[in-house]
Image (spheres, rainbow, N blue to C red):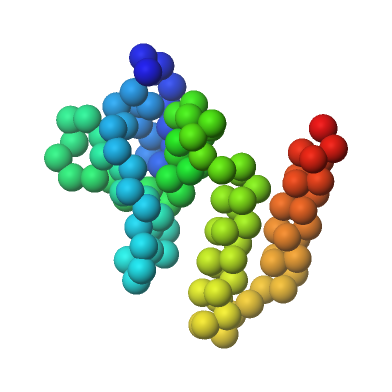
Length: 113
């Protein structure tokens, strides 16, 4: 890919799409608190930590066909946040309802279109 498209990693960090050569999902206890993906960038010795998921980054790189639908990514993120909030005793049902309705609405529109 020779694109000079910039890809957001979160919190004001951007890299050129053609400089990213590896993505690794952060799992387990390491994941969370704005830590979703390790991003290896040409010319940078250590991976950058992105607050965005690997599938979102891949889509931004123009690799949408290689990943699941954005609704699935959003639904998984929502489920992870809900589980974390429930464990901590902090669940915002209004926010949860808004996000769930938005995901459902986008899925319905995609199926109809």
